[in-house]
Each structure stands twice: as C-alpha cells, then as structure tokens.
Amino acid sequence: MNFRRGRVREDPDINLIPLIDILIVILIFLFLTTTYSRFAELQINLPEAAADRATDKPQMLTIAVDALGRYAINGVTTNYGDPQQFANALRDAAKGAKEPVIAISADQKATHQSVINVMESARLAGYNHISFTTQRR
Image (cartoon, rainbow, N blue to C red):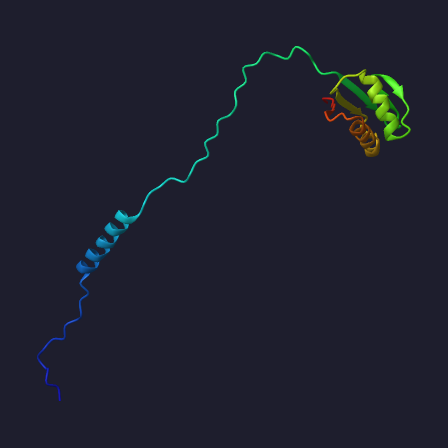
C-alpha cells in the first residue's frame, strides 16, 4: 500500500550559504591571529681598508725542485740530506729575516715527496708562509 501516491518526492538540498559563512569566519580568524614576522637576517658589516701600500715587502725564498729531485734555494743548488739540514740551509738563505715567504717552484714531473720535504723543512725552520708558483699555459 502506497499512502503517498500523489506526492512528489523532494531531493535533499545542501545549503552552501551557511558553509561559506563559516569558512569566511575561519579565514578572518586565521588572518587576525597569524603573525607575519620576518626571519632574522644576518647583518654583516664588511671591513673597509684605507691603508697605503706596504712599503716593505717580505723577503722571498724561492725554492726550486726539478724532476730529478734536485733542490735550489734562490738559484743556488743545495743538497737535501734530511729535513733539519735543509731547514738550516733555509735559515742561512733568509739571512736573519723574521718571516720570509717560501715560494716553491716544482717541476710538473717532480715527486710529491720532494715538495713535502721542502714544506717539512720550512716548518722546522719556523717559516709558516708557503706559496706555490705556477705558470700560465
């Protein structure tokens, strides 16, 4: 038995207006409660130099190492016996200079150990400023 014969069945409606109202209230709440702060930035003040050029240049000791393992200090061939002996030769070549710059010029075929020998001798002599020379192609 169908008691509702003449009635048309209504489809349920979803009313979107209250949903939109609630979403707007939530958005307003989020906008008001959120703090917009920048992340801390690093403030870097770089140093400025206003000095004149140095009038006294540091003394340079040029040490050459060839492919056969021969050493030369300022163009004078020097035998390498042990690191302490070569350190004494470096001190003699420096002629009492306090902090000479050691410039190592090694042949491209020179062994790595021969360059390390010069660096070890410079350390024993107390010379910390070491540089390597290169040649442009």
